[in-house]
Image (tube, rainbow, N blue to C red; front, side):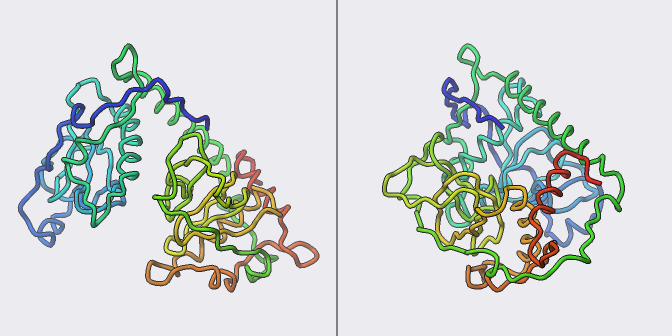
Length: 338
């Protein structure tokens, strides 16, 4: 996807665009609240499931069409709420001051808002309060010096159309039998026998400077392909090679990196330069099956990953069948998997 040109965008203070205050909630303990099973969502202090902690048979306390965030968790707990819902303690609501905001323009804004909050490093210790949220500045598209709502709406509509188009291709795989991979001829391989697994040089946020035209800065994140942001190139940087798979010890999510990049703390990479990009994507899908065994208390470090056994398609010589893997991903992407 092409990078959006934001040179002519304008900065806006969030508090000038939205009223921010706590959502209204029922004064009930959780055991009493969530035993009232129904169809009305309860938005809680969670970074998952759009912040919804359950569904109850109570009257909604808030109208849909707003953005919510928690001031007790991290910047990942920011969501657009399309339906009327029940509020919760410490969940903040963002109420548009301009009636021109629509669902699609709010979804567009949400991405920029979430990134701005993420870059500030808000977490369980550094709380994301409504005062801090109000004072964040967000760059948005403008037309004649006013927010260009039509641009934001059209951009999201196009994104939705492309997503539907993509899933329509996948739906051509219209039977379980067509999607099922036959694994009888697969073989177990020790990962350390197939690839070098490296510990790159570590760069902390104080060592880098954000630059949208720069190189990727890969950290322990499950989002945005692991990239916190792009940073200015420095001749002192030791770059990790392109076409490798990055992963974090305390966040065992594997991402394929097409460009050269630098890494944050506890980041490592699998040197997959000898196989194709599509074969690497196939490999990642196999690697993801082992991630649930690792956590913040038991990190996936290179020594452990080298000993992991993964099952892969085998060619006639007993080696991993990288051609088969590449062909499978190609067919999957173009919706003609047989």
